[in-house]
Length: 185
Ligand code: AMP
Image 1 (spheres, rainbow, N blue to C red):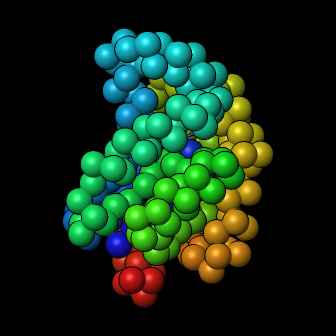
Image 2: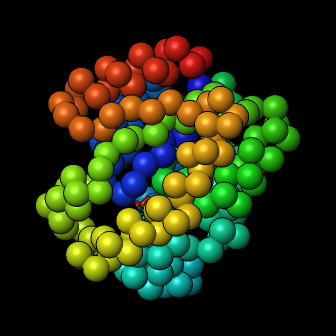
């Protein structure tokens, strides 16, 4: 199973992603986690990424694609994977498809978490991570709608998009996702 979780920051990708990994045994790649580890380690990439992340912007595609290529290359193809927070721009999505086509391992399904902006704002303010102050959240939502939301029609056109309502009981949402994934693979 090769899947992508798509949705605004705070839409539940992280929470549901953990459940998907536990239940389906797929590898988990989160570019946000990789970047936070680089920031914590104080690496040159981390230092460069921190400023962008703190401001709510997107790290350049070339950097993200370098990370993605490396991580995906290390995976056991038999196990499958779940991508969370990547791709986030159209060029990233196109490059990902090309990368996966080369090894004949195309994506099976893209799960879109449908949550409205007001709910997202409430959740993100409650979560209060270093990169979650109100201005940053607004910027991140704007960046999502400008740069990432176009992926919705990109994947819909491929016939691979599945939309899941991301509001309500966490376990019920997961059961919906489980059904969607079992259907798609
Ligand atoms: P996340 O934990 O996925 O919300 O990512 C945290 C931050 O890392 C984002 O706000 C971006 O600044 C950066 N980031 C993570 N993944 C990507 C990506 N695919 N493209 C660009 N920037 C990213």
